[in-house]
Image (cartoon, rainbow, N blue to C red):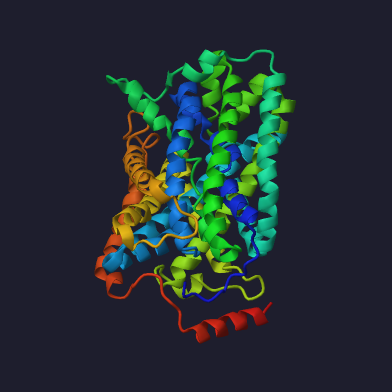
Length: 496
């Protein structure tokens, strides 16, 4: 690909899959936005929306995997856009990279912010720790700092923890569903779990039910994000042209199956007579459901399983986020690029980019101090930013036609229909999730600030491009001759 091998290849196919599976994290995504499904559609959108969104996301993942097989580099999406964009490749690469950067920072914020709510909930049960916004932000800062430290120690430690995470998630789902099936005396009927509709949004205009149901799909769509991590980790993965695509696709499929089982189990444990109090638990609503169904003892046990999964998830998100910052900076696209793409000679990890990811996520979570609905905006930003970045190279791959050179993992005759359906779905959700999610949508406490964040990035990257970057940014850079690349790699190897 024209890059020196600065990052050490020590990840297997399973390691690569584990990163994406951990970032999707059904125990994080499904449960941290469970409250949103309860208000925007109720059990019907939670249980029926999940397989529908999961199938659409599988098509997106298949289309991405095919491109990943041809271009297995840490730059991932924006590198693909440069290669597929032809004469305008640099411009496509620039905007893909900035949307990917926005989405990566937002997904890290969403994961660790969600973890902070659950940690705060348990600390409140144990020690009466306050549940005020400032108290939750304090937990959030500690979580991000911890994940920054873990990633600084090196990819070997992160890879080992990711392997543990896969089994933690799968066994954790089995334990939670089993406990929810065996312990509670009462369970909701099949009809309630799959067809009961709730509209707690404040919308009451004609046909509001359909609109509310569609906005409720954020519950599933947010969870199915971050699987591009397998692409970002390809420079650290053996047999990357096969392992990267497999990591993308299998992380989605296994999450689809296990996540549906989890959501059915939790939805069956909802206490209808206490529904309002349960969704009032906000991000920690599943904790209230667990207490109502099981009592504090069992509820605390299940919450610790969830918190462990969320911790692994946030750690992996910082990993993938930092590799994207590293790769984008390596090509000069981020202000201060020389600083952000430095590699720590001892750990062979992009330490500065790791802390860029952590601090950026912290800043994105700060609006919660004055906007109680900020978390749903963060999740919307993650979906919009990431999926626009996913969609651009998929669209360019379709437009490239015969110019695209397929890698060893490809879709053969299914490439065109899968790719076009993926593009249409991405365009639909990018519009859907910038719309108001509660009524009235123009107050400080209900405003969806996702379009503001997306607009700021679009205006900044657009102005930067037309005023300056188009004159010097040429897309992903080839760093030199084969001899020069070998010299760089030899110098890095000498440091360990």
